[in-house]
Length: 279
Ligand SMILES: Nc1ncnc2c1ncn2[C@@H]1O[C@H](COP(=O)(O)OP(=O)(O)O)[C@@H](O)[C@H]1O
Ligand SMILES: O=C(CO)[C@H](O)[C@H](O)COP(=O)(O)O
Image 1: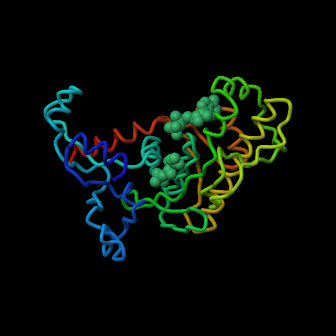
Image 2 (image 1 turned 45 degrees about the vertical axis):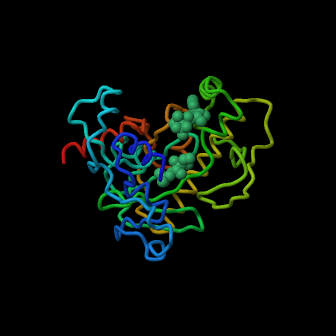
Image 3 (image 1 turned 90 degrees about the vertical axis):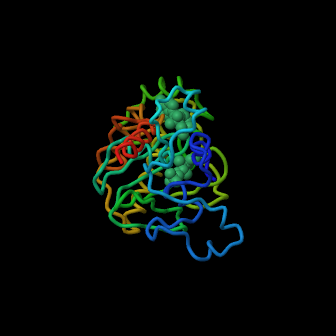
C-alpha cells in the first residue's frame, strides 16, 4: 500500500484501492490497465491494490472523519496521484513538449510526451496522463543537498548576489548522500561538492549551475530516448521562488523556464478532486 492509498483509506475505509500513477511503482501497467502476468502469479498478488484512473470517486467519506474535519455530507473521496504529477497538474501544462521540474528536496522531471519511454539504465519511466505520457525521472540532487549547506535565509540572500547571466566554471554533482537515480542510475555515485571557494556566493552559484546542468542532461537524455522534445519548462516546489536559479536554468537549458502559476502539488490534487466531483 502506498502512503497516499493509506491516507485515503483512513478517509473512505475501503481497503486496497489505488490510482495508476501510484500503482506504477508496484508494477501496474497503465497502458494495458493490468498487472503483468508474472506479478499476478506471485503468491502475494492478492495484496495488490485495485487500480483506477486518478480523480475517480472511490467512496463517501467515513462519517467519523466527516465530523472530525467538518466536511459536508455529500463529500466523496477520489483517487489521487503522486506528488510530482500533482505538481505537473497544478502548473496547468497541457501540451506535449511542456515540462514541469519540481525543485523540492529532489529534482523531479515530468515532460508531457506523445510517446511512452522506459529505460531503467538511466532511471527513465513514463506515467500515464489520460491519453499521453509524463516521461521523466527523479534525481537525488535538489533542495535537500542545498539545505545541508545553507539555511533557506542564506539561500535567498546569497542568490540575490549571483549574476545569473555569467556561467560559473565550478563543476559539481550535488547529492545529499551516495547514490543517484536519474539521469545517471548509480546507487553508489558519490556527491561532488569540492573545491569549495571562500566566497559563498560563488559556491552557491556553482552548485545551482551544476544542478541546472543535471537538468539539461536529463532533458537531453529524454530527447535521445525518443520523447517529444521539450519546448518550455515550468517550475514547482521550494526552489521555484529562486529567480537567479530560474535565469541560470534558462541559460543552461536554452529554452524558456517559468515559475508555475501554482507551485504547490496540493493544488493539482485539488484539481483531481474537482474532476472526480464532476463525474
Ligand atoms: N531560495 C531558495 N532557493 C533554492 N531552493 C530553496 C530556496 N528556499 C528553499 N529551497 C529549497 O526548497 C526545498 C523545499 O521545497 P519543497 O517543495 O517544500 O520540498 P519537498 O516537498 O520535496 O520536501 C528545500 O530543500 C530547500 O533547500
Ligand atoms: O524523489 C521523489 C520523492 O523523493 C520524487 O518525487 C519521486 O521519486 C517521483 O516519483 P513519481 O515519478 O512516481 O511521481
